[in-house]
Amino acid sequence: KKPDDCHVCEDAFFTDTHALGVADGVGGLAQELPNCGINTAKYATELMELSCAALKSGGIASEENMPDNLADRAATAVEHGDSNGEAFGASTITVLCQQGNKLGVANLGDSGFMVLRKG
Image (cartoon, rainbow, N blue to C red; front, side, top):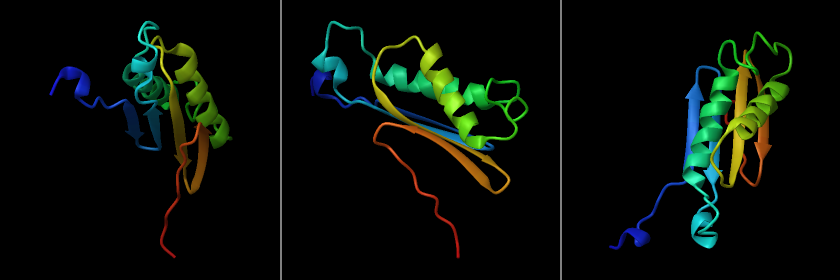
């Protein structure tokens, strides 16, 4: 195959003790806009790295900085990822925070999630 025919993964994710995130990069965007400096794989990766960092201890969306609202923590992590990245691209993003038996989620785009549990 020619290099242009190879599939490039434009998605990224993170998992942490009490959080997870998925960024589903828009495939083929760089080919549609070749002169715009778009790198959707790098964009999705930055979204996940920065969102994860925001949720870690001492981060802007950490439990100690935002102890009471899990949905706000998730949304703040998403905003931090989007605001501080350097790459250009497009991606959906879902970030979930867990504390005890509660979940908080922020979701942008057409991605989603399910909570599956016994009984």
